[in-house]
Each structure stands twice: as structure tokens, then as C-alpha cells.
Length: 201
Image (tube, rainbow, N blue to C red; front, side, top):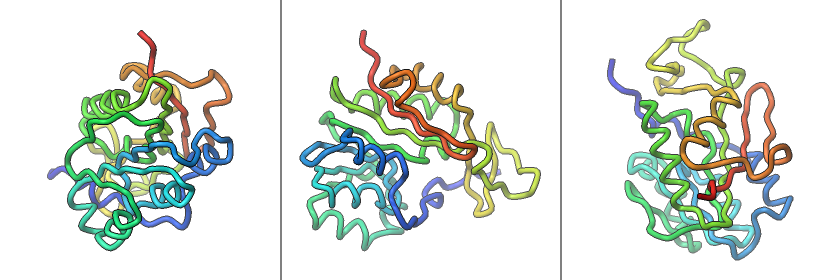
């Protein structure tokens, strides 16, 4: 079977991800802060953060940028910067990565992605990481059409649902840890939200 196109996973949503809204409300993200969004999709988080006064850069695949060309053009005209198929060299006060890790395959590529994210964080920076749990994953058939360690979705893309402990273990292997043991996470049956920082040597 041909590998699913991750660029097709991006969708438009009416509002930014919950973890982004709550981080802004809690003062973890603030005006003037430098933020990198990895896998920005249709830019719902990036535009929201930009409107709150943050300096926002985005990393995304060429096909996704082409799908939402008008959105990316408007984002750039408002001061945002977009890296297509490459990564910035700077380090950021925060990195946002929502619902991306679960569409990455194979397994080793997820670890590589999180290690790259860890390297993009300042020493005091935070990573806002969200992933779908089994309760929020729609599969091609009722029982699910398996592919690698995940499933094929109705639109033919790949999705890997996570358990909270599984996602935390992956983050730890990439050199990341919870910002605080309790307050930095929130999850329900369908979504896992983690706020992470770099592991100190």
C-alpha cells in the first residue's frame, strides 16, 4: 500500500487548539514572545498567536502550504515567517505542535521530530504538544483499517492514536519532560495535551 499523504491531514477548525488558548490565558504565552509552530496546517494557532502580539514562525510541508496558499500569504503579510521543507536556525521561547505527531510515520520519524523540536527550544522554552487518543480517532472502517502502528482515516491519511503514558515516554526519549508533574497536563478521552520543557543535562 502506498504511504498516506500527511499533507491531506490538515483541516480548517473554527478556533485554535485548547492547549494554545489555555496557555495564553495562563500567561505561559505572551506578547513579544517568539513562537514556532510545527505543522501549522491551516494556521489556526499561528494566526491566533500572531493576533495576540507574539512573533510567530511556522514550519510546514510544501503541499500543505499550497493547499492553504491564501492563508499563508496573509500570514506572511502580517509579519509571520514560513519555513517550507526546512527548519529555522534560531531557538524559540515556545514551540506549538498540535495533532501532528500522530500523523507522522514511521515510528522513528516521530522521535526525530521531537528531538528537532527540543533543539529549537530556548533553555526556558516550552513545548505545547497535543495528540489524539483512541476516543478521538476516526478510522476507515468501524473496526479500523490498520496500517503500521496506526490506522487509515476516512480520507486516506494515517493516524496513530496515543495513550498518555506512551506519549510521555516518547517525549522523554527525545529529551523532553513535563513542565510540572501535575498541572502541566490535561487530557480527556479523545485529546492528550502536554506542556513540556527540555531535559537539563
